Amino acid sequence: MDWLTQARWRFGRIGAGACVMLAVWVALNMALSMMLVQAMGQNAVNAPIWLQFLISSGPLYLIAMPMGLMVMKAVPELPTRKFPMTPGRFFTLLLMCLPIMYGGNIIGNLLSMALSGGTAQNAIADLAMANDPAMIVFGVILGPIFEEWMFRKQIISRTRRYGEKLSILLSALMFALFHLNLFQFFYAFGLGLMFGYVYMRTSQLRYSIVMHMIINFNGSVLAPWVLSQVDLEALATTDTTDAAAAQALLTQNGAGMMLVSGYGLLLIALSIAGVVLLITKRRMFEFYTTPEQLPKGLGGQTAFGNPGMVIYIAMCAALIALSMYGLF
Image (cartoon, helix red, strand yellow):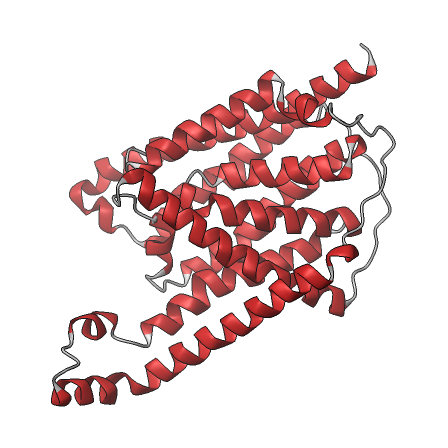
């Protein structure tokens, strides 16, 4: 086959591998969930959080991802040199992640609420607010390791020969779609671009993994814990015009409210710093011509206009739509 046809076939193979990974994961997740319902009946909704994570993530990490990789392996990796990243550069890129994350989160929440008429539920946020140690194991440690291994190493290493920007974009989009909900789509896409750039420039997973872990720890562990230091229900229902009630609320939640305020102000300051860095340091993002760089105008068509990628995008879009209305 000619070079362009081969490139299209290879991108299609990556998409086909992602389809296998997604289909196997969803099928096993549904099967295990049904078994849980049969075993626990109505109490299944109150199953331990560690068990919910195990049912969801276990099949993905142990079965679905390896099966998807078996299909993707038909596309060879491009050998590259590994480069270190200085602590200063790492911290700069990490700060840039904050406005990307919070901006994307706001867009995702607003769009989810608008499209669902306010009925969409953010299941991941609900799990995080439970402050369960399982979140550290699955959300902060295992999740970043396996996700970076699949969406950065396996996908970028096999597609970077056709263009660095195209490879990063493909990886970020596939990563965002794989979250299967609109709440996370936009910030996952933005962070995926950043993590992809970090991997592209270093060819080492450790940097994007640690960055991913820090982001997840802040959003899934630290932020929920800080909020839990305040009685949010009492805060919402207390009549602040009643001096005695307001004083009692302040006495009970004063320290927690100071902690929440301090944490919020710190995040605002860091996010502003991140925006400033994104603007002033935009020239630090360097991209190089690759051995088989696709001609301008053919990149998107070749990478996304093939059966494997079209089916993957369609599958994810359908599941995202179902999840928005509580049907998945």
